[in-house]
Amino acid sequence: MNASALKSYARLCGHTLARAPARSGDPAMIAGYLGDSDVFDDAIGRFALDYANQTERDYKTLARAVRDKRLTSVEA
Image 1 (cartoon, rainbow, N blue to C red):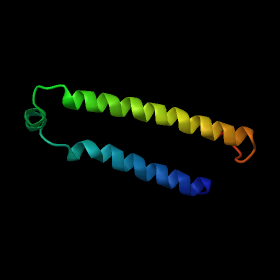
Image 2: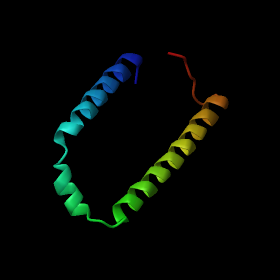
Image 3: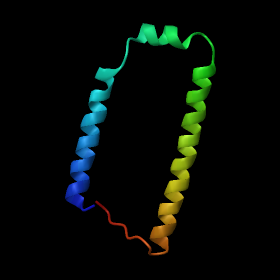
Image 4: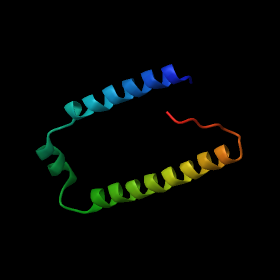
């Protein structure tokens, strides 16, 4: 993907994410659906930690590829 295409893609992603809250449900109904247990909270916490760990692994893989000159990096 060239720089122009990446910029367009990032703009599209940003626009999509900016509109996402407008599609969210009623907070009271969601709270009622989730109930009082910690099941959802625990699941979100596990997801967040797993996601963070995966992000760190991905970064290390990317950095190794740049270091080994399998990829090149540029400063924007």
